Image (cartoon, rainbow, N blue to C red; front, side):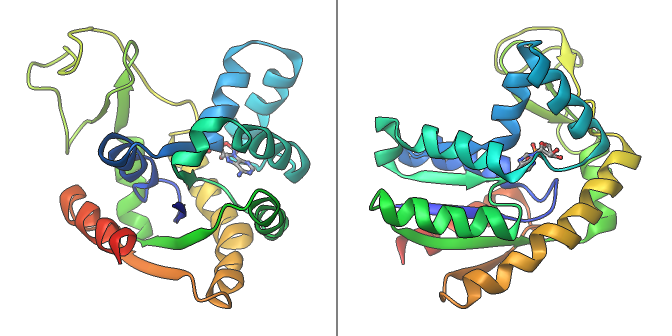
Length: 215
Ligand code: AMP
């Protein structure tokens, strides 16, 4: 089963994707994570991606589509893919339709996590993660049990995404409104869109998402 998680930055797409990976063995296809890996490699391309990401700009469609197309050919994707942060433009949505058709991978649902944008700014600017294992934390909502020590692995160094500052977050939201929200009608026309309140707590969102997957 393949699904798309849609919603502005900070809506909880990554959190829900990780739950589905743990519970159902599905595969999280986060284009943001893939791009951060390329960036971390330090290559020329990675540097260019980094500059665009720090501005909150989108990476050109052709590169993203190529990345996803290649990743979808790997055998683990047969367990079900969760598209997280992709598609983000109409061009990407059309290309994904074509790819799924060509690879005989049907789309079960497009789950839109609906949110309050102002609350999201606080959610995003407060988030950080363990530098060792990647476990996610938040300055207000989810601190480690022992201050400064990762609950999952005991590591004491943490990191923040460079694009999680208020100005870039506001720019990323504007990009979402301008380029990504307009793809929703594309999926509405296919009868695939399901809405879930992304401001509810994580467990409630998880239950609502599970109900859609099991319907
Ligand atoms: P995310 O981790 O999904 O918030 O993505 C972080 C940044 O990576 C975005 O602000 C964009 O610069 C870039 N990015 C991620 N996914 C895409 C995509 N599907 N298309 C274009 N740019 C993307």
